Amino acid sequence: MAEPLQPMQCSEQTESALPGLTPKQIVEELDKYIIGQDDAKKAVAIALRNRARRRMLDAEMQEEVYPKNIIMIGPTGVGKTEIARRLARLEEAPFIKVEASKFTEVGYVGRDVESIIRDLVEMSVTRERAKKTVECHTLAEESAEERLLDLLVPPNLVRPLATIENRREDDYQDQNARLKTTRERFRQMLRDGKLEDRMVELDVQERASNVVVGVPPGIGFEELGIDLKEMVEKIMPSKKKRKSMNIAEARQILIQEEVDRLLDMDQIVHEAIDRVEQSGIVFLDEIDKIVGRDSGSGPDVSRSGVQRDILPLVEGSTVFTKYGMVRTDHVLFIAAGAFHGSSPSELIPELQGRFPIRVELNDLDEEDFKRILIEPKNSLLRQYAALLDTEKVVIEFTEDGVEEMAQMAAELNRETENIGARRLHTILESILKDVSYEAPDLAGQTVKIDAEYVKEKLSGIVADTDLSRYIL
Ligand SMILES: Nc1ncnc2c1ncn2[C@@H]1O[C@H](COP(=O)(O)OP(=O)(O)OP(=O)(O)O)[C@@H](O)[C@H]1O
Ligand SMILES: [Mg+2]
Image (cartoon, rainbow, N blue to C red; front, side, top):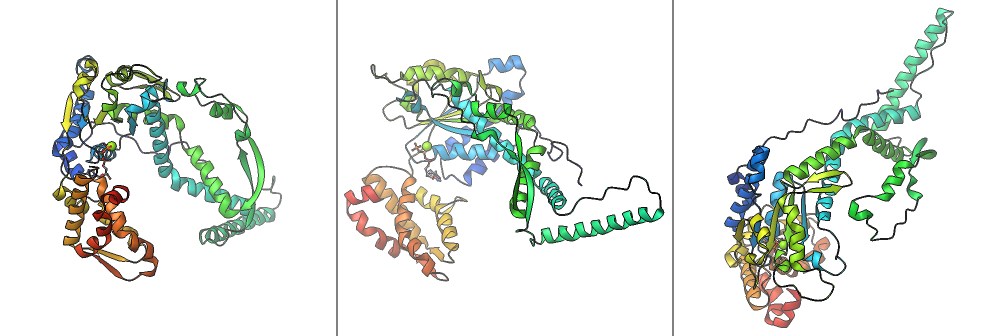
């Protein structure tokens, strides 16, 4: 039988040096996905670098240097969220997006802003765990295979207590050798998938999940970050139950058991919290919704009240989570909002001071749309082409076709509502609706999308402003 592996044998050492990407490199990476908005890209790149720089200062100096958070100002659909999201991916940073306005809504009253950090940690733990699981998977599979073989062929014979005669020892050796060969033969069959349906018996852990833990909502456990059910499960002794199942099922269970055994939860939590503290990014959307005068009466939490709640997080404080304490000193906050008829200068002064970097994003025009359709690595055209490729339909966008789409998008944004690049999603969906529907019957064919095609599909809708309001 295989030696049981020690926890975390399979984990690599994690580094924690100053992150390598320079502002220029960050902008280059963002360029692959986002067209234009150069100022915004530069600003986030600088903010990221400044965070890294601040982390390098000694504790005393760190106190002096305020975090350099950002406010992105710009109309809807021009890339605010996309920039933040890509930035987080680049850094492999824990990232969370929250709508600031949520905290003033009825039903959210009293939901403390610290839940943002708790959610961020939760996400980070899940991700760290998934990462480690992948690292451990091969090892877990190997041990699971041994355990499957144990179920099929006993590992080895019991050596006779005293070997009175040589013959008995010989017998023993003989049988053992034969057993080994059998085991190897079974191993081969297992690997060839020939035993998947063979039934075996396995002792499986019975989770205490049938215990119903009822806590009335709003009692505060969630706020404290305590998961009562999980606690009860930990206290309850886990029972084992013998179950009969086929090899395929047994393998899954055994792999999971091995993974659980190999994973060192303490280390995972430690690294997850470390990631949040060192490179977490909180995207505060709709920040403009919490500026301005309070509505006065009603169940709304006052807007400046929410700003005051957010302030400590941004300034750096300690948040209690079920995984332990998390410091927010180096969490990067990126706020965004349209700021129609209001301005960041209406934020409470303390908060303004913590968001020193302001950047405006531009409206997108026809030329931008054209580039957005074509250039990004994940451009819409590529996405649709890939989707239809699964049906063996080749889709070809001609240049005048793309131009037509871009022009339509710009026109519709002018005439109906300006929804920025989101317009391209609705337009493409309408253009390709028929092809998408008929694709299974078009296998092997090439569909050419030129200006003619685009016009034909859209003319009816565009002509009618009322209709286009709903459809495009
Ligand atoms: N400059 C751009 N380059 C490439 N794609 C873009 C650009 N701007 C927007 N998009 C695309 O348009 C969609 C909407 O963009 P995004 O979510 O960033 O909007 P937003 O600025 O956050 O708007 P909102 O204020 O409504 O939240 C996304 O799919 C995004 O990929
Ligand atoms: Mg957004």
